[in-house]
Length: 398
Image (cartoon, rainbow, N blue to C red; front, top):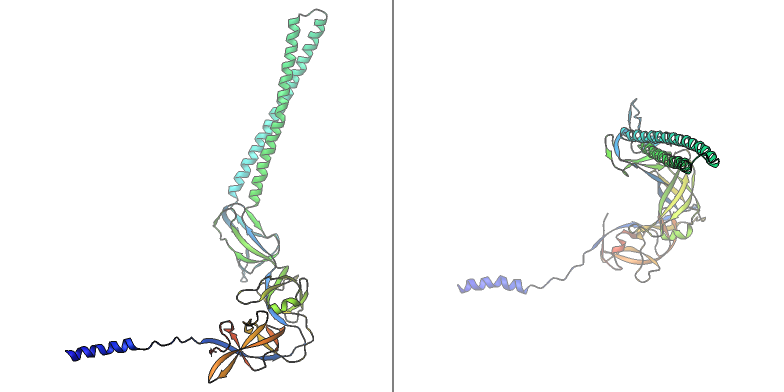
């Protein structure tokens, strides 16, 4: 029994006396790329994408059932509903709501106008009749006055003639006072007619300009409410090319600068545009600034989504210079005003990252010229550069 107890305690002793293993810092995986050299006499080129310079959200002012949507040829002898990518001309009817509900309102408003006009005619007739009464009362009063002056009429009869004249005049004044009210009723009813006709007109959405359909958000039979979107149209007459520029390029860009562009979709066709927008802050993930170049598109040859090459002015560079991708550039801890790259070197059979302070030049295509700090052929970290430190062991992955 004693031997069994000792054997039981032996594993516990080994478990409790085992030394705690030190924490091993995980090795950071990185991707590298060899420093290359480029020679060019042109300025840097950047890839950008074509986007609409302006877009219109077509929405219903009123609600109703969608009765009709624009149809276009389907290329097989039939027709289909318009959808994304179709080009429409200015004034084209895009979608219509059921008109019957709004025609009823137009008829009701028109009926009120007719009633108001009839009431005006009655009021005008009343004025005419009141005027006849005034004229008769005036003649009676004049005769009574002449007789009264000859003392052939009593004072009571004279006063009666005067009262009849005053009463007739009051009736005329009252009838005339109804004329503006009757005319106002006509104007009010006509306003209802105009409003009903406007609502009837708004059951149809018309393309405000020539453009391409970006989105269609309705189907035939859909019940829509006021403000519901129906289509998103993009104006194709003016487009913009958007590309990302590194901070070292911003000093060479200015609003209104003329830049050349080209696209493989239109080989040999020179394009030109002006810088119309430079982002005030860099994108958090790519660390580049969005630049917009607005260019005309008179023949609608360019389409949203096309890739273009933006050509910046050159500086006559003719010698080979080392270049690195923008993703390899980091801020060194020693100076937040400078730049550095991490070069992977082999030390003791391990891949070690070494920070090299660099002096940057201009940009070539989507790379940055390095004037000093690295040499052609050195392996720089292009993915994971922000996660490593000087002297850290790294794992180079494909």
